[in-house]
Image (cartoon, rainbow, N blue to C red; front, side):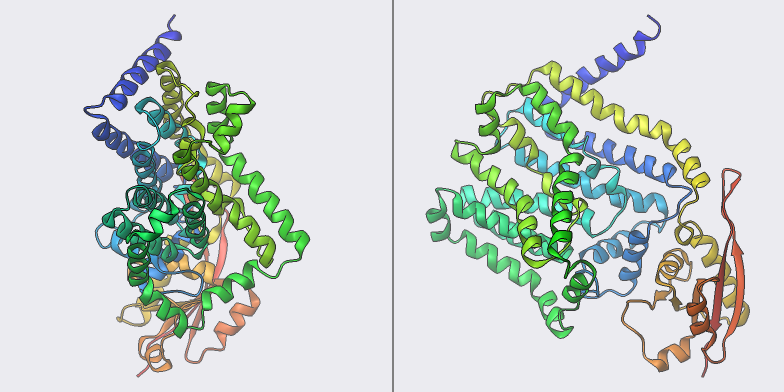
Length: 504
């Protein structure tokens, strides 16, 4: 009885939670409060569990981009950099605040998924669908690593919501929002072309296509999107479409067998990530063959529009990869799941009882709470396993570099170069907020001479060290960095630092 009592209390709490979320008078407010709690719980988990690891390279890279704001970058378009720039203009540059920003991406996506589901699901199914999405690792574990993939989650969700509303109502406001959202998607990552193509396919398949294309809505969408996207298109032209060349160089020109294997991995991995909520929904629905077919390809036209808007952006990347020889990965499907609850639950014969919703809410509540309890152990295990040194040592190394720099000159440190992986971590952590040189627009030789520069690399990287040592009027030092966490010392790593002081 003593063991069962806490579980009974948790079950009662989940029941009250379900009642609050399904209350017609207060469900919108209560869902917002639940999503705020969701973001805070996972932020706290990330701050503790990753406390021994430092910031991931992708997160440091976004900070580097934000220090050199541009309409585009070598690897990606600029939305992630602008978000980071805006965020750290308000919040302190700290790990906890960065994980909070990261968790805002899936949380906003969940809000749009909730709003969108109102057009297809009753309130019980809406709550169930929201809870099912919370069990997908894309919306928590993977989302804690802020990058261009996580940035797509809210903008894909918003664009899908606004487009479907625009298509059904032909509202000028929703049409304009859909265009702005589409541009934001492309400014996040060019992968978003598959979302836009998928929504276009959905509009062509639906029986109302004539009404839609004869209205002003699609042209308002196109105009609004082009207006927002135009500055970046100009940047692309002036920079010889550099991100496309980078993408092809990294992921392209693969043999067909390699591409096919990657496509199969894309499907297997993506479906694996959503397997738990999909299986739960099927267990609750217990569909026969006819119902299952209608879930995947609905007979009812309104639901079919949503189904095509779900399937097309998910399937088109495979066709594009096979046609172009591009290697794709399942992580890139991260923003594509907004409509999954609609696909799984909107079939009329699928019924969701209050007890089913309560049980799924228990799972959705238990997951972040259990992970929060385990977070200190996860951090200790990561420390024992040995985190990536460039990330784990970034703050200590930045302090050492700034100390050595100010021993030579009172001027602020403005530029850091050398090994990109180390440089980006140092730039993200340094108090003086310097700019990075690798893979970024280069300052003039005169500016570098006036400002000086620090070059840093792993001590065993002979090529990097030799290149740095050839810089005239420089001073080279070598330092060993050891990071301890909760009294557990990590493995030491030696770094070569070359300081080139300012010259008149």
